[in-house]
Image (cartoon, rainbow, N blue to C red; front, side, top):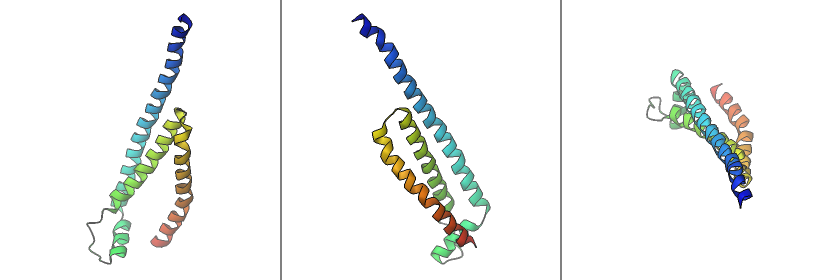
Length: 124
């Protein structure tokens, strides 16, 4: 019984440290996601590319009610948060949860170059 009681702090301490690291990863990921999303929204507000794209889709040059900046910022926010969640789950060694998320991230990252090239063609 004494041996069991002596092992509890060792095992619990390792688990608690993993949880603290996972929470740290989530907090840092959240902060980075907020900053990058704000930077993307700010960059799109400074340009007129988003207004031209919205006008092209809707067909009206006076389009101001489509929030393309906010939508693009949210996409970047959730993508970065998905990376942070996967990293946090990896820290907790929850591979049953991280494998499907890794597959999703792999599909998204395979699609990004196509989306980027379509955006370049659209701007040109």
